[in-house]
Each structure stands twice: as structure tokens, then as C-alpha cells.
Length: 310
Image (tube, rainbow, N blue to C red; front, top):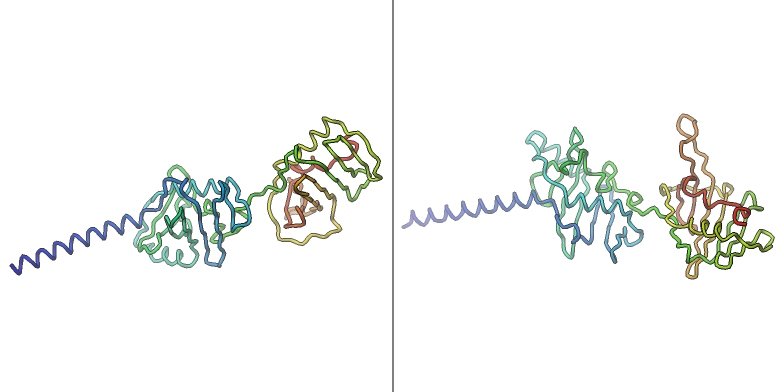
């Protein structure tokens, strides 16, 4: 009887151990969230103290409750979260180095619906750059992760630059998006050639020069111009101080609800070899906010003369 009891407990312990082992293994390899539509919030944090919260509010995604997220950036992130798979386990020889790197330069991600769904750390790429090291929270075993059919490492798809998070890489780069039907007045000031400045009242087809003389604007030219203020995007956000003496244009776009102010400054930087850049640019500010880098190709259509509207 005593031997049978011991045998029973040994069998029970073995079953519990096997169950726990299988449970832990399933937990450690469970990275993918197949239904990306249920994801409502994502937290990212790097080892330098940078933190980013991405949250869906009324079908739009925002960064840190302030800025709108770029559509392509959030689509790439959600697609990655729902597509990643294990490429292979980390070898015993590489285990210690991988764990050390994950602990020192890894970026943690927490993914939520109305509760925490997944939490794992994203590390550096493999030597061939076709896999990325990751480990689930509280797990012992890291894995090399990939997206089947995608040739590349995954950290940039999480918005990670090297091992660092940069909030500007997530931000929507829309500068102006004013529907033409909402515009009631445009005040264009050409700072260096004031005789080209004007005030346009499109609903009345009235055009004023710098001396307040009034003209009738051309209907087709007016319509074409007020349609230029939609979907204007910057190249990047810049942490620089602008010399006010470099001001070129000042534009006020008035709607019934808001006035948008766009200031344009010269940008004269050359390439490292002192050659002219392939893409010509300006510095800009919207509503006296951050400095933006914009391309002439995109914005030059705004900087016309009063004669272009007659």
C-alpha cells in the first residue's frame, strides 16, 4: 500500500511537471496577436528612458495623447504584431550574449485591448539581418523572430532606430489640410518682394494688393489656388533655431473656426561634398510651433504672385 501511494505521487508529480513544461513552452513562444483589430493601445520603452504610448481614440491613433500617428507607421506596427513567427530558438552558444543584449539595449513593448495581451522585449538583429531576437516577459528562452516572406530585421517596423525610440518617427507629417470650401480668406505676404503680396477672399472673388486696392480674381485660378492647401506634408521635424532674417513668406489661412499661420524660411545647406542637394527645401513653422523641413516641390504652388490670380 505504501509503495502504491509513493508511485501514485511520483506519477502525479511527473504529470504536473510535464503540464507546467508544456504550458511554459506555449507561453514563451506565443508572440503573435492574430486579430490586430482588437489592439487598442501599445506602450514602447527603451533603456534610455524614452517612452511612447500609442492609443486608438475614435478610430485614430495618437502618440502620448498629443500627436496624430502616421497611418503607414501604425499599419506597419499592427501588421508586424499580427504576423511575427519564430524562425528558430537561440542556440546554447549564443544564449548568454543574447540575454545580455536584450537586458541592456532591448526595447520593451506592451500590447493592450481592454487588458494586457502581450509583453515582450525586442533586441538586435541576427548577423545576416534576417531575424530579430525577442523574449517574452518573465520567460527564460529568447527566440529569433521573423515575418515569413519578409527579408529583413524587425526592429524598424516597431519604430526602433538602433536601440532607441524617437517620437518624431511616429508623428503624422501633415502640415496643412484645409478643405477649399472652408477657406474664407488667404493673406499672403511675400516678405522680400512685397509687391507680389495679396489678400484673397475666394467666396467673393475679391483680391487686394499691398495698397488695399481691390481687384476681381479669376474664378478658375482662385479655385485652383485654394485647393492647394490640402494634404501638405513636411519631410521631417527639426530641433533647430531659425534666423528670423531668413524669412521668405508669411501666410494666414482663415476659416470660420480657425486661422492657420504658415511661416517659410530659407534653407541653404549643401551636401557634405559642398554640392547642391538634389531636393531643394525650406524651413517652416505652422502656428509658431515646431520647425519643419519642407520640400519646395510640394510647397512652391503656395508662393505665387497677385498677378497669378487676376
